[in-house]
Image 1 (tube, rainbow, N blue to C red):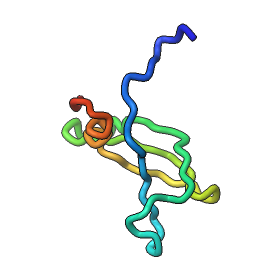
Image 2 (cartoon, rainbow, N blue to C red):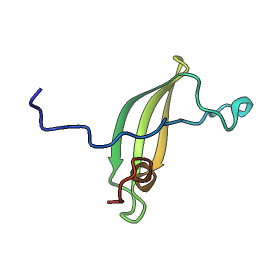
Image 3 (cartoon, one colour):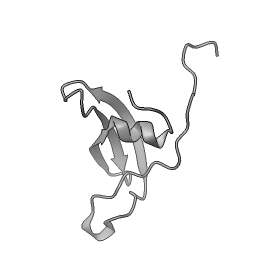
Image 4 (tube, rainbow, N blue to C red):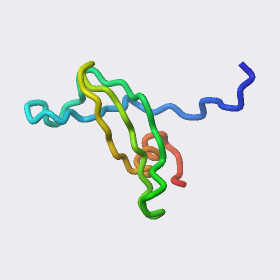
Length: 79
């Protein structure tokens, strides 16, 4: 309560694609995002969000997602 942050947008379901060849084109069955950071080492033209997450309660993984895609998912104009 009283914090400086507030929710301004909510996306539709966010699917992290399975990396298993047997589940190509499907979401991970169990997925839990544990961290996100803007990768400042990449070009300003193609900014990337690095997402760390758990898959199926047994693996740790990293995904690299274009920031522009995140903005479009939220229905916002890009940075």
